Image 1 (cartoon, one colour):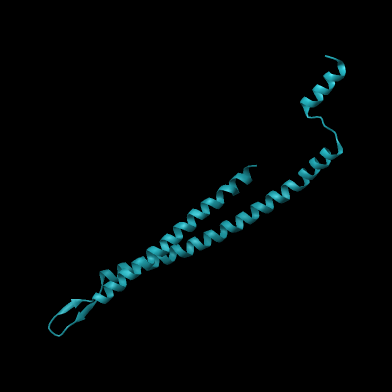
Image 2 (tube, one colour; image 1 turned 60 degrees about the vertical axis):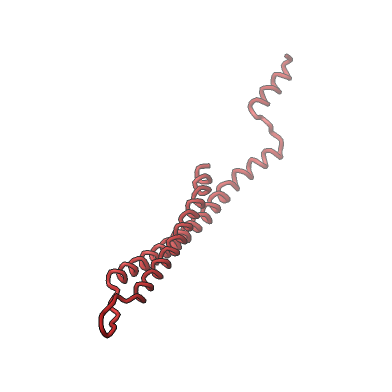
Length: 129
């Protein structure tokens, strides 16, 4: 192997390309990497905060409606018919309607929580780079 081919081989092994384009691209990479990275992280973080707020809101509504269900079921009141009293069927129906609405809110909160997990994965991957 000749001396010039040996030098070229060593340069190639070290990645020693000194063309102006490669130097310019390296400078652009260094200058633009961190603003782009942290700008993207900031936007993902704001989306995560929005999802946390929505999840908390829907979960609180869900708990409120489910608590209303238990209060109404435990004390339905009486329907006073002249000869006897019966538990108020309409209150029991409203209680189950509250349970249904509470479960819908719980499902929405669960979907938002899963969405929060899906947004946090790219956030962690970008943060690790």
